[in-house]
Amino acid sequence: MALLIKNVYVNGEKIDIAIDGKRISAVGKDIKGQFDEIIEADGLTALPAFIDMHTHLREPGYEYKEDIASGSAAAVAGGFSTVCCMPNTKPVTDNKYIVSYIVNRAKEVDLAKVYPIGAITVGLKGETMAEMGSMKEAGAIAMSDDGQPVSTAQMMRLALEYAKDYDLLLCSHCEEKSLINEGVVNEGENATRAGLKGIPSCAEDIMISRDIILAEMLNTKVHICHVSTASGAQLIREAKARGVKVSCETCPHYIAGTDELILGYDTDAKVNPPMRTEKDRQALLKAIADGTVDVIATDHAPHHYEDKDVDFSMAANGISGLESAFSLAYTYLVDSGIISLDKLSELMSKRPAELLKIECGKIEKGGLADITLVDLNKEYQIDSETFKSKGKNTPFDGWKVKGKIMKTLVEGKVKYSV
Ligand code: DOR
Ligand code: ZN
Image 1 (cartoon, rainbow, N blue to C red):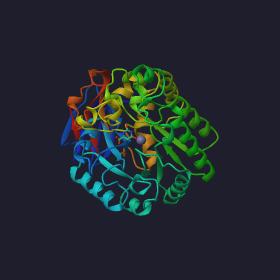
Image 2 (spheres, rainbow, N blue to C red):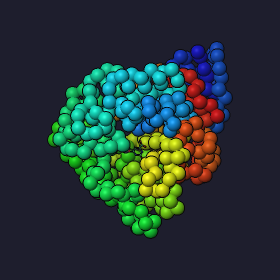
Image 3 (cartoon, rainbow, N blue to C red):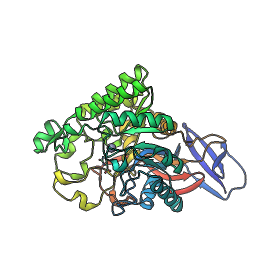
Image 4 (tube, rainbow, N blue to C red):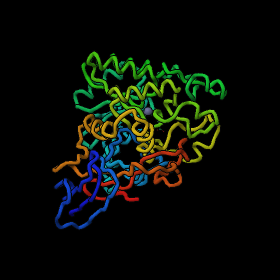
């Protein structure tokens, strides 16, 4: 299949992109030739399609919240060619059979590329290490107990040693449970105002410190999931400066939102770790700009309406994030002048690909044709009712943003089109 994308902006220049099979065969002005399909992209911008290293697809077990088909549709609608799905499924993705199941089901669905992340411990219980080697063979791309911390330092030490041997990235959900103490939102003024119990920043920071210390001692890599605190970002900045192999991600909701969003008791704003203060948000913007933050990941956590339509303290944690990730990141990072579009592309495609050792889209001759076409000038309102995801749970519903996903190509095939 040969495809031509005409008049598309790449690095500010209007060019054509010719695609043959899954690779780009030519880039330049006025490309001529025989094509099965021509996409007139006047005014749109081409970016390497995004890679989300932190997605919850919920299948197997919680298909009423999301399944591989709906989650994959949400991914390509959000401009993602690739998602890595977390193992807090039912049963937990802690063995090769479930890893294989996810790989095969995603191939049947044939929308986004889906890479399972295997559990570090059996049942996410933190007690017995899961079989990393056989999960890797079955297609697991990384290891994580996300949703739960690896509570003991001894288990984390062992897991880091095994992950090093198997050359798998270990993604750590940093939460010191003893400090949660029934907290449901960020500890601070807004929690007090709302009369809700708080989760202190140090619950996250202590675990980030522990993991940095372990990675430093073992001279191995560790990836910190969903950093939400100013102090956590500072710990990672300092560790990187002395050569520790630590990487990290933050999410669109920590870039765009703060704990003010909980003042109306909107349970869609309940997420773990919680949205923090404006000071934290500003510090994260700085950490993104100065390279402390490696990746923007969604932590796409779809939930059923009924999981959220309960008392705040009982509501499930999580935000349906795939379909608003780019526009929130573009609006709050690029349109606001904090980073360049190129840098955002690195945070959402190149860097996650490097950490996961996979190929990302590259808009040059020979590059993989994982391409997202975006309308950078398009202002629109986020409308969760239009989400392909089963999860309509977002506190950003109705927010005005800029930058709309118009088409997503995965390995040269159009998988989403407005
Ligand atoms: O808000 C969250 N939701 N944080 C997590 O760590 C897990 C996730 C989920 O699975 O719903
Ligand atoms: Zn998590």
